[in-house]
Length: 231
Image (cartoon, rainbow, N blue to C red; front, side, top):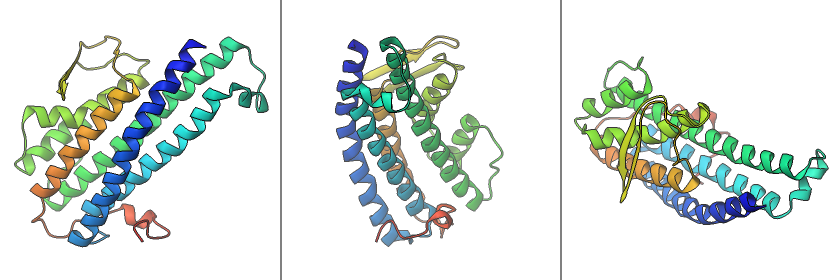
């Protein structure tokens, strides 16, 4: 099946990129644990972020096996070739939505933790919250705001059947992404998702440096850990 071969190629290529990002975030978390403590959001956020990428890498491995051997589906349900193809497309879409949803929830929680420390309001929608966040740490410009929002816009478009609820107009690296409100987006591939997430994390590392003088910022993530993922 042609679509399956395309998915296999894309995921194999993207997996290597996410694996490098996983290692980078793991190193960042270790560095921040020494600088701020493991209980600080500036460490906790990166821990939960590399754990989320680990989940994605494991999911990629399972999906690659399925793409190589679609008979695995026979262990669960008998389906025609078209039905199998439809499942594979749906599986890929669900993985993209799940990863983006969880990751952007973590980003939102990070911003709220910093804003709470600065005694700023946090009861805002993501777009306004991210703008308020950048303004509050004296780091706002339009491009940075777009970088914080682009992965969320992809996520929302996937939830909306592929159509964007708000206009998209952002440049990532050498690529310009643009879509009018209500248009179907054509840039929700894993390659674009990686580009948007990688650019987002580079911005967040710069933001960490910007707020390094703020005293201890509690992390809610550490309460979920049963063991130390950095040990």
